[in-house]
Image (cartoon, rainbow, N blue to C red; front, side, top):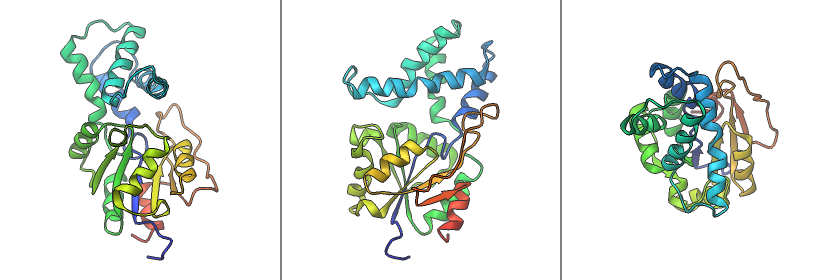
Length: 233
């Protein structure tokens, strides 16, 4: 590796490594709740950023994503008029975020990258969620890092710089890999390298998103497997 090559690849998870929309929509549809799984998944995810802002603004104390997901779920169930679920069913549905399916290229691509780099998560998801997801999906992380460890959600600099501190490397020796340009911008502002992964169907086939290249990123790849190609793995 050249001196400028990263030592650590830190991955965003929701949308980048796993298909949150498809996974949630399929499970909701299978429950026969009388609602669109597609619409329900989008509404649940739409509450994610506003809920985190309540924490960062001090309106709520530090809150795990599992608990924020449950707060949002209760609101979405009410909006969609879903009243037939008991508490045990709600708790199970809330844990769908632990059961998200990986994109087809994720496990083979990560396995290739792991042969040359240290690979870890850098997600707002809590540690238990990320560990359960990895176990179920076979995601071969060297280390699971979470906003929970730093008590700050991305894009707080504490998260990006925290990865460098954990591995005792310079920020420039860490690369954030993500499918979200705002996340990558936050990492670049902290001196990290960045790699964008195209996930045009993150929000479902009916809602394709723009995956245009951003020239400020170090790398732009169509998939994690493509990133492994680019990095010589």
